[in-house]
Length: 78
Image (tube, rainbow, N blue to C red; front, side):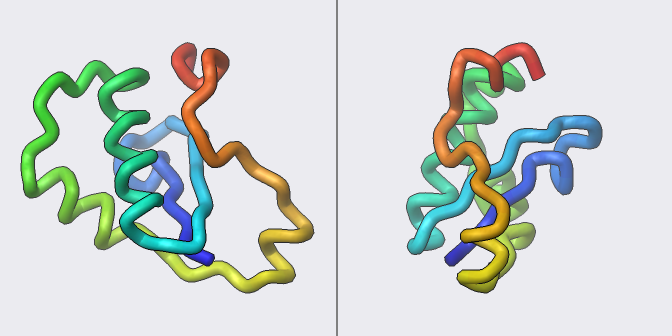
Protein backbone atom coordinates (compact mmCIF):
# COMPACT_ATOMS: atom_id res chain seq x y z
CA UNK A 1 0.00 0.00 0.00
CA UNK A 2 1.29 3.47 -0.90
CA UNK A 3 0.58 6.62 1.09
CA UNK A 4 0.97 10.36 0.54
CA UNK A 5 0.55 12.95 3.29
CA UNK A 6 -0.02 16.42 1.89
CA UNK A 7 1.48 18.04 4.97
CA UNK A 8 4.88 16.71 3.88
CA UNK A 9 4.59 19.07 0.91
CA UNK A 10 2.19 21.75 2.15
CA UNK A 11 2.85 22.46 5.85
CA UNK A 12 -0.31 22.42 7.93
CA UNK A 13 -2.40 20.36 5.51
CA UNK A 14 -3.69 17.19 7.17
CA UNK A 15 -5.08 15.51 4.03
CA UNK A 16 -3.66 12.14 3.08
CA UNK A 17 -4.45 9.26 0.78
CA UNK A 18 -3.61 5.58 0.39
CA UNK A 19 -3.89 3.26 -2.58
CA UNK A 20 -2.32 0.07 -3.85
CA UNK A 21 -0.69 1.77 -6.84
CA UNK A 22 1.61 4.80 -6.85
CA UNK A 23 -0.14 6.15 -9.96
CA UNK A 24 -3.47 6.28 -8.10
CA UNK A 25 -1.88 8.07 -5.14
CA UNK A 26 -0.35 10.65 -7.52
CA UNK A 27 -3.70 11.11 -9.29
CA UNK A 28 -5.52 11.72 -6.01
CA UNK A 29 -2.80 14.08 -4.77
CA UNK A 30 -2.94 16.13 -7.98
CA UNK A 31 -6.73 16.42 -7.70
CA UNK A 32 -6.35 17.50 -4.08
CA UNK A 33 -3.79 20.15 -5.06
CA UNK A 34 -6.23 21.52 -7.64
CA UNK A 35 -9.32 21.46 -5.47
CA UNK A 36 -7.93 22.49 -2.09
CA UNK A 37 -4.74 24.40 -2.72
CA UNK A 38 -5.84 26.21 -5.88
CA UNK A 39 -3.14 24.82 -8.16
CA UNK A 40 -4.58 25.36 -11.63
CA UNK A 41 -1.48 24.09 -13.43
CA UNK A 42 0.29 21.01 -12.14
CA UNK A 43 3.85 21.05 -13.40
CA UNK A 44 6.16 18.05 -13.63
CA UNK A 45 8.21 19.21 -10.64
CA UNK A 46 5.06 19.12 -8.49
CA UNK A 47 4.39 15.52 -9.56
CA UNK A 48 8.03 14.67 -8.80
CA UNK A 49 7.66 16.26 -5.35
CA UNK A 50 4.54 14.18 -4.68
CA UNK A 51 6.25 10.97 -5.85
CA UNK A 52 9.28 11.69 -3.66
CA UNK A 53 7.00 11.86 -0.61
CA UNK A 54 5.01 8.68 -1.22
CA UNK A 55 5.74 6.07 1.41
CA UNK A 56 4.99 2.38 1.72
CA UNK A 57 2.63 1.39 4.51
CA UNK A 58 2.17 -2.03 6.03
CA UNK A 59 -1.18 -3.79 5.92
CA UNK A 60 -1.32 -3.46 9.73
CA UNK A 61 -1.09 0.35 9.45
CA UNK A 62 -3.84 0.37 6.85
CA UNK A 63 -6.20 -1.77 8.92
CA UNK A 64 -5.51 0.18 12.10
CA UNK A 65 -5.93 3.63 10.57
CA UNK A 66 -8.77 4.10 8.13
CA UNK A 67 -8.11 7.39 6.30
CA UNK A 68 -9.67 9.37 3.50
CA UNK A 69 -8.52 8.22 0.09
CA UNK A 70 -10.30 10.75 -2.05
CA UNK A 71 -10.75 14.50 -1.71
CA UNK A 72 -14.04 15.28 0.00
CA UNK A 73 -15.92 18.50 0.60
CA UNK A 74 -14.40 18.66 4.10
CA UNK A 75 -10.91 18.49 2.55
CA UNK A 76 -11.57 21.71 0.66
CA UNK A 77 -11.60 23.69 3.90
CA UNK A 78 -8.09 22.49 4.78
